[in-house]
Amino acid sequence: MPNKLTHPLAKKVSRRNFFRGIGGFIANHWLLSSIPLAGAGVLGWAEYDTLKLKRQEWDLYYPNLPAALEGKTICQLSDLHLETLRISPENIYESVMAEKPDLLVITGDIISTRTDLDKLDPYLGGLTAPYGNFVVLGNNDYSHLSRTLFKRYLQELNSIGWTPLLNDAAFLPNLNLWVIGIDDPATAHDEVDLAYQKVVSSQQLATVPPFRLVLAHSTDCLDDVAKNGADLLLTGHTHGGQIRLPGYGPLITNTYLGDLGFYEGYHIINGVPLYINTGIGESMIPLRFNVPPEIAFFTLRKGNGEPRHQTE
Image: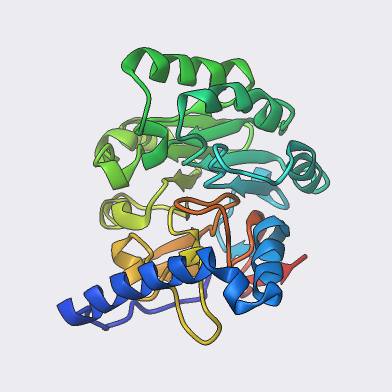
């Protein structure tokens, strides 16, 4: 397990601060919708932050890392929101495949509308990794699909090479790695114990402890993940706030941990190494401000070193 430890904050959110945050969130959205009054510079900044896709690159160190995972890279995408996404499929493809990841994962909120089903292949169909592509769903993936179209959604993901894990797990023996997928916590689809069922039943057969990579859309499942154990938990959902005025934190993060100050980046909380991806797309309004979209890469290393990070 990486050595870096970030302690949970003790801050409490009062009712007054909560409603103040809601009011500020609405005010900020009004501000952005009235950007001509604030000047073209602000609009240009928001446009840049919406379209400039960043690569977050991490080296994570584990004393007991399985030998097969040494130097292997996991690529995480999150919150594509294809209904409004203006970043091109070619841009995403080039950013992902330039790093030649060994494993590809998406942590939810790919689509929101029925018409987004036709966008899956252009955006995701060309992305490949030697050890597989895995996906969990988010709240928007459940929003506007009938049961019939939801089945079609899962079938389409499978047909273009992505394996949905809905409270399920897949073992990759060549890597001695479990990929554990937790269904969306934001809509109470998460059943963490069910997601770990295969992992628990196989523990007595393992001679070398496998690495446990856990995927979930939101951090709101963290308590149960910590109970079951994880070597790395990858999440999204917060968008890093999506809109952050300079000098201020996000007003809305939509998660329990976000209210406590954990809304993006790498932390260790309750013994779980956790990454909160700010995502690629947008919700509510098609703009980001001071929170650029990102794709995250995690290279696993054997050892006791501190996590290393760089942004491109």
